[in-house]
Length: 69
Ligand code: SF4
Ligand code: SF4
Image (cartoon, rainbow, N blue to C red; front, side, top):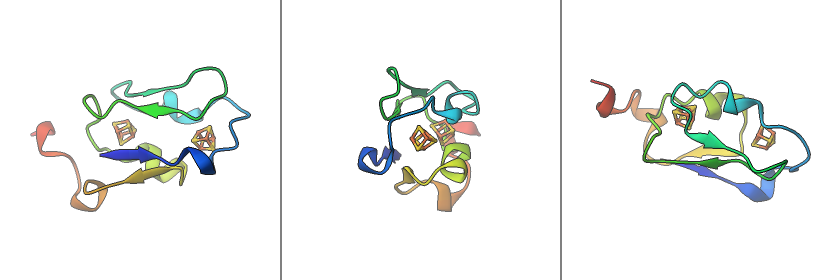
């Protein structure tokens, strides 16, 4: 799963990862810290590579999520 460490996000700009997530799992309310819907997330880890606020727990280091197979 992907955890958003909100305390690390300055919450002052549109989050660029919304458009890079292939399954639309990331949402943002105004300039708040983004949220990840881990039911939708396929652990492609594009958000993790773009910003360290996105923290993988037991997924990115294992590659693509098995649900992709
Ligand atoms: S999560 Fe990262 S990229 Fe997204 S708004 Fe916060 S600091 Fe910016
Ligand atoms: S790991 Fe991939 S699928 Fe999951 S929230 Fe990040 S960009 Fe979206």
